[in-house]
Amino acid sequence: MTRIKRGVMTKKRHRRLLKNTKGYWGQRKNVFRRAKETFLRAMAFATTGRKLKKRDMRALFISRIKAAVEQHDMSYSTFMNALKVAHIDLNRKMLSQIAIYDPQAFSTIVDTVKK
Image (tube, rainbow, N blue to C red):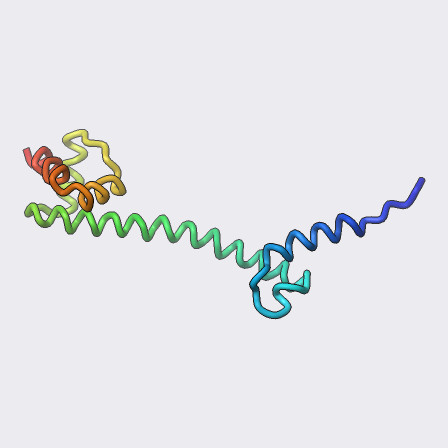
């Protein structure tokens, strides 16, 4: 049985990881061991960041809707409850987009909900 040398695959694996750590500072970009631990940590932060982004965007949508609804003398919570009662299924992202880009349509929604 012949001996299998694994240098080619190891080099490929190292190169792939070092390509991902391009732009990092010092040994973090060119020493495999340092690069690997830094990259794993970066991926963990990226996962957390994606979750926080969703949370931040929802808060932004809510504040936009609140500002638009207060112009019609209504609170955010009563507006959202009235939407549910009226069976208008629009998510917060779409409501905030409508409030910004089409205020007339948003006022129509508010008038529909008030009835």
